[in-house]
Length: 194
Image (cartoon, rainbow, N blue to C red; front, side, top):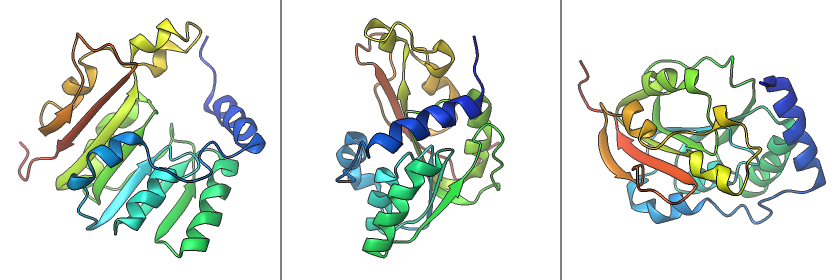
C-alpha cells in the first residue's frame, strides 16, 4: 500500500512534536567525514532537511542554504537555531513530491535519508555545472532490521551509481557487497554535459 505525502508529513510532525531528534544539531557523519569537499561557496540545497541539522552545518561552513521539508514542526527547530546563530538558511515548507527546482541554480545538493525517484532528474538539472551532489539513503539491507519499511523508499545496490553515472564520482559505498543499510554517493556534475 502506498500512502500519500500528506500522511508522511503528519507522521513526521507527530515524531518531531515529541522531541527534536538532533537537539545538538550535530550533522550526519557523512558530512563530517567528507568536510574537505565542502568549500562553503555558493548556494546549497538541503532536501528533506528534517530539523535542519545538516543545513545548519552547511551554513556554518559558509553556504547560503535553502532547506526544504514537508514538516512544519521540524522546520521550527531549525528556525530557532538559525535565529540564535544568525545563519543564512532559508526554510521552505513544501510537498517534495510536487516541488519544482530552478535549473543550474545550486552549487551543492544534499539529500540524506530521503527517496522520491521522480525528483532525481530534477535535482541533477538544478545543480550547476561543477556542483557537488551528496546523496545518502536507505538501501534494501534496511529490511533486515526493519521488515515493515516501505520498499519504495529503499534503493537497490548500484542504483545511486546508475543515477549519477554521468557525474565525476568522488566517493561511494554503493556496491553489491555493501552490508550497511545506508548507501551514499558523492559526485561532481561535469563542467560540460552532453
